[in-house]
Image (cartoon, rainbow, N blue to C red; front, top):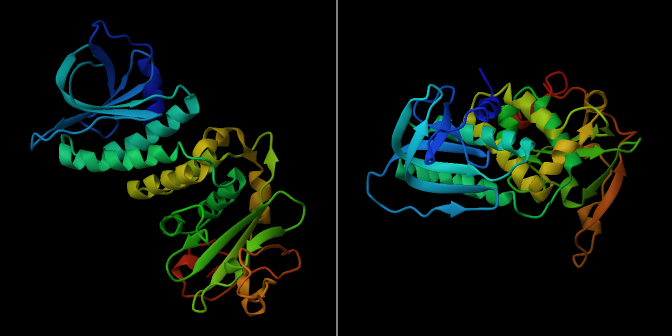
Length: 331
């Protein structure tokens, strides 16, 4: 099956012979909705829709995307046959090839969930999700590319990536990277030669009925390796649930924000990361006891060297979260 981006690239060789026409192409597994090309050579999506209540819908014009509801369109298909109808048009406004490919895939996941002719009410729900997603793209960066790469590596290497993604943090400021409401996983990465990580006081003192595992990995940048998006592709290849795939994109945009495009330029040593990936029971990680801290003192962070701490090789557990980690490590 052709990639969505390849289908879009092929459209650049086709120019509509009518001023008010759009060059379009079919999408895999989708009947009526189409991908198209704007006069500026940017991607468009045409979503076949009907307004069952005749209600008005406000159009959107964001930094990276615009959405126009209920537009009468004349479409020029691959076989030169002209189709006319009412469509909602979603237009991407970025000329970055990397961002185009990434966002085309996101929009394709959305279209897969829609019926052949989308009702305006259900279409607006999906559009609101898109608006939320693309708004995140305009915020300031909140977390490093290295840290996100390490979290994705843990997911990619897990025995149950879907469960880990469901437990993935909803905000980059969450206390733990993975939290299923019972147990926790915190991922730490370093580019140094020793396994030294920075912790907050709260991170090593979870609630007493929760079990916390620390995942530690060496994430070293190289001239050639794997980017964040290489890891995402490896994860996508193992997952069939479109809601879960959309969730990955939410976390990426939430975390990277304006650093999103830069993430395509950062490559990390994948094999070194695999060889160094290790897990530690937080109970054996040196920490500052909460009882020794005066109530007036807060926001405590410290570095901890895990080099001499025994790795978690085998542990009997009933935790669904921890069972989702590497099979040979957690059983």
